[in-house]
Image (cartoon, rainbow, N blue to C red; front, top):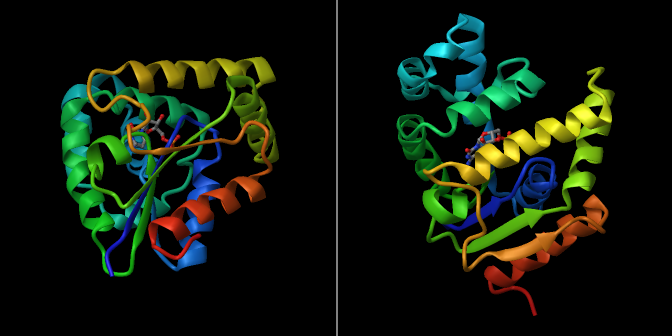
Length: 212
Ligand code: C5P
C-alpha cells in the first residue's frame, strides 16, 4: 500500500511529535524533512563555509546520505538558523526533493513533516495537515525543550530565534511555508500534545476510509 501523510507547520508547533505518533499508530515510515536541511547546515558550519552557502550548500545537499540524518548536534540553535538560511536556496531544495518524493512513495505508507510537503513535495498526498500554534506558545515550548538539553538562551532570545525562522520560512520566494488549500488545520495552542496527536490520528483514519 502507498499512502502519504503530509504534515507542515512552523517551528515548535508540535508537528514532529504528531508525525511520529501518526507513523507509530499506522506503522508508516516517517521522515522529518527538516533534518535534511539541518544536515546541510551542520556540514557547512563544520567546514566554516556558511558564507559560501550559495555555491557549497547545493553540492552538500546532492551528496547527502540517509546515514547523515543520525549526525550529532542537528538540533543545536546555530544549526536551526543556518538551516532556515540555506533553505531559501532553490538549488538546495531541488537537490533534496527527489529523496523526499522517493520516501513518500515507499511501500507501507509514509508520514513526512516539514514546511512544503503538502504544497510542493507531495501535492497529491492522501492526507494533509497544517499544524500551528500561537507564536508565544511555540516559543515557550521551544524554551523548555532547549533548557532540557542544557542550552542557555533566555525566553526572549528563543522568541527572537522563532521569529527569525518564521520570517525566513514564510517570506522566501521558493516553497514558502503556507497551508495547502486542501490541508486540515490543527491549531495546538490550547491542546496537550496527546490530544493534538489523537486528532491527527482521527484525520488519517478518515483518510484511510476507516473513520466515521
Ligand atoms: O523542521 P525543522 O525546524 O527541523 O526545519 C529546519 C529548517 O529547515 C526550517 O526552519 C526550514 O527553513 C527548513 N525546512 C524547509 N522545508 C522543509 C523542512 C524544513 O525549508 N520541508
